[in-house]
Image 1 (cartoon, rainbow, N blue to C red):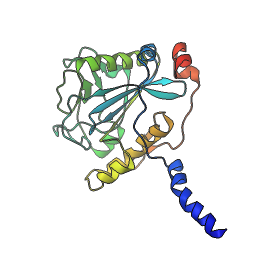
Image 2: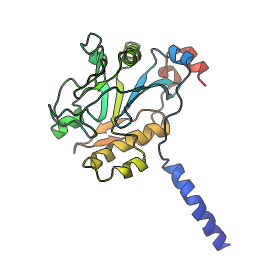
Image 3: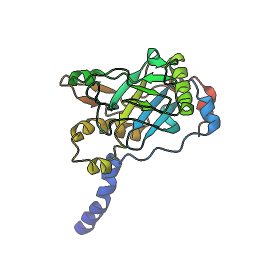
Image 4: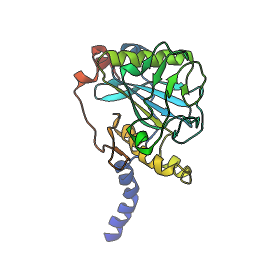
Length: 247
């Protein structure tokens, strides 16, 4: 009996480990085009992945965020790693928040969203730089440049969400999808310690489908909440159709 119990434990251990600490996976398929149209005005959330050159736009339905669409990033500069100083041509990585006054509909680069770099974490590290944007025109020196068509959609949803009551939109920017396997692949990078601070934010959203709450500690490190903060469905979206027709 003891040997049987030991054998079962050895078989189940990897399964239990995965259940407790699941490997974050690829996002689910986007919602239908019909539902996507109905979600204009719902709270939104953005994730950016440099290595995959992908921007993901999520909309809130009930108590979770669902993928509205993925957009290819036309251009960004400086490769992987955080932006540290003005003129290094790097595009930022980290956890950012966008308010209504950070939207630039009249940008010379065809609409723009100021990411908010430098944030509290960046300032604590002494990083500097200005006007790091997500914008159109497909041209970038430190920004995330999109096609004009993609930027139209991204701007429409962010603008509607903020004008419909969302106080700020989280924009979480990662070097790549921060799975354990990808972290292992980059373990010798100069930036690995910084990326280990970002990974819990990615894993949290992959598990709960809710953007993480992120703070900066007194020692200047990112700290991510470990349990979800659940709001009521009424606060999630003002679109009754979105809540009732979501599949």
